[in-house]
Length: 315
Image (cartoon, rainbow, N blue to C red; front, side):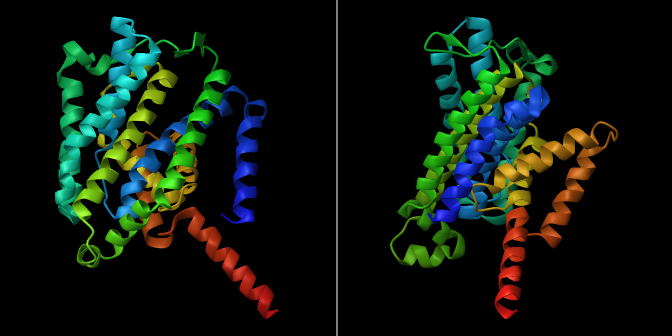
């Protein structure tokens, strides 16, 4: 990692630490959502940006983990130390099953993951005796860790920030490991990697499971933040927005999904306040990004930076 990137990371982390004292309650709440949904987008981008797989079922892992944690805490009074890991395990367990979709490629993979996601969404709505149907699971208690209950938004914000820092560190190590390099090799030339002795299905299946575990962790954090879980968390538009966040910010990067989460959540909150069909705006954003900025916000900044460097050198 270059010195410039290290300074950027330190600066961003310092800004995140002081943000609650600058943004107030609303800004702190919005930033917490950006952290959580940015993590969901990062999980989807592990497949999209590094393996070339466009998944539309990540909301399923997100929702199953959130539901599991909420139900255990609300109905069975299971402590956080057991309910939260159980949620992550349930979401990851679903990933073990849904990961079989890596046997397909291209549009078939998209359609299979889309169908799988709809199964979970349908269960959430139809199994009302267990999931609560439209009403969902309410009054999720604040998490209690080592005897400390994170009742205030400020404390929960810093907890999510700490978890996020750990996830980003592990993710950085993963994508720069031989495994991450193999994933990018499979994305660029699967047959070539197979001829070199690699097993693309095994690598993609492992990446899918890791990705589902990250999405599940985001779901657990969401359940405690929102204090309410309903079938909307498993809907197609949540999976679509996760991918859109990665594309808007810059796919195959670490910072990109969080930039995209900030843009999409900020735009959604703003547009939905005066325009009922705000999902149509998200669709237009997707079309605009794919057409004019396929590398996302980070890609645009890189091009502008390279152009300014060329002009400076020529001048």
